[in-house]
Length: 96
Image 1 (tube, helix red, strand yellow):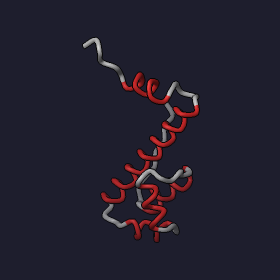
Image 2 (image 1 turned 30 degrees about the vertical axis):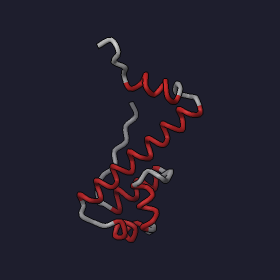
Image 3 (image 1 turned 90 degrees about the horizontal axis):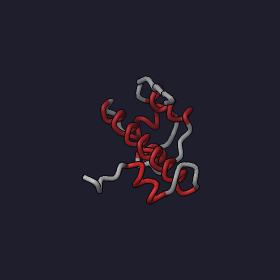
Image 4 (image 1 turned 90 degrees about the vertical axis):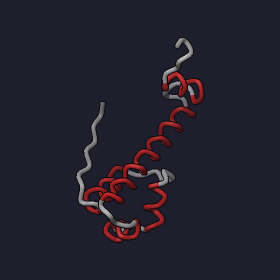
């Protein structure tokens, strides 16, 4: 059990400590991916297509697709619009 490393240690080994450029990029990319997965799961739960979500929110299907794949940097206001208006759900954000 001595060789067990926690996830933070792995991140430091691979990307550096928080605040370094490579770690900041990893953290931002990770957040984009997680937000995309959450949007996709919520959209599927609502049983609507990417195209329907795009129509409801005045965006494009390709943009929804990029968000869901974690390939788009999204503003909180846009994410709010997708969740609240597009899916009829409530977006809760907490800072810990």
